[in-house]
Image 1 (cartoon, rainbow, N blue to C red):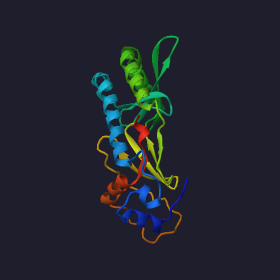
Image 2: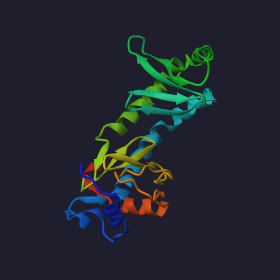
Image 3: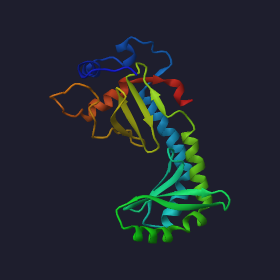
Image 4: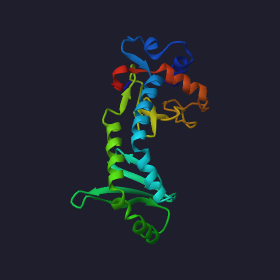
Length: 219
C-alpha cells in the first residue's frame, strides 16, 4: 500500500489528469472508479430485482421490521425493528431459520418477548429467506476490495454502500444506488493539519473520476 501526504493529495485532486497519468502508470485496461461504481450498481440492481419481492413479503407480514440484508461478514440475514438488530441462521437438520439479536437498547426481557413474536418468521418464510441469501451471496461471490493503479486508494465494496480508503485508512462512504459520497469524511493523512475543512461534494465526485482501477474487476 502506497501513501500520499495531504499536500500531494491536493495537487493531484486539483490537477487536470487522472491517477494513472499523474503518477506515471499505463492506462491500459483501466477505468475510472466512477465507472467501476456504476458497474457495481448494475450488479446490485440485478440482485435487488431478484430479492425485492421476497423482502417486501416479509416486511408486510411484520410491518415494524426493515433493513432485511445479507451480512457477508457474518454469513447471515439481518433486520431491525428500530431498536434491536436481529439475525437469522439456518438449522440445517430442521431446515428452518432461527432468530437471535446482535444488540438492543431495551431490556433483555422485552427483547426476548420480541424473539417469541418473530420466531415464526424463519419457518413461515424459509423459501423467501433462502432466495434472499442465495442471490445476495451471488453478489458477494467476488473479490470485494479494489485497489487503485497507484495503490494509494482502495474501495471496499459492500452491499448497500462502498467505502473509499486512502493511505489504508477510511476516507468516505459512497451510496450504492445514488453513487453519492457521504458528507462525512475522515482525513487519512499523518500531518497535524490546521485546515481540517471537509472536502466539498464536488471534490469527492471529482476524485471518483480521477482514481483508476482495473477494468477486469467487473468481469
